Amino acid sequence: MAKPFHFKLDKVLDYREQLEEQAKAALARAKAARDAQAEKLAGLEARLAAHLANQAASSASANDMWLWRQYKDALSQDLSVARVELNGLELKLQRCRTEAVERSKDKKLLEKLKQTQAKRHHDQENAREEKENDEMATIRFEPHDH
View 1: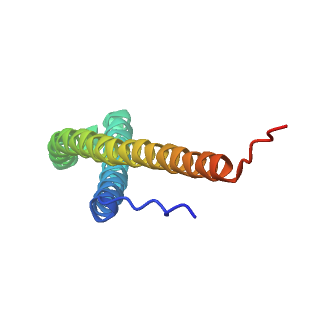
View 2: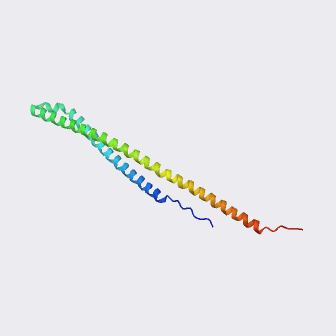
């Protein structure tokens, strides 16, 4: 009867799988945050474009022009802040992506080792079993002397 294969680094493999899952989750969160910020930025750009398109309506009085300019400046400032935030989130997303790739490589390396060791174990067990069968056949063989 062949002995079952036991991989000595199973706990390490489980740990690396857990780290990979955590990295994938962090990547998903970073992507969602980046997408939300990109959407926010697009909204601000649309509001600024609409505001600039309404410039003629603001020429009614000095107060309207001042309010129009203040709102335009505030939107421009918000846009700048949103762009900086988006760039930071892009960097974080890239770091998370790199981390997820590294974790995946670490796990795959151990999985490959496990497969290699399992194949070697299987081959050794087959060779041992074949040797035992050959020995039994040799012992049972009765030469026919006529």
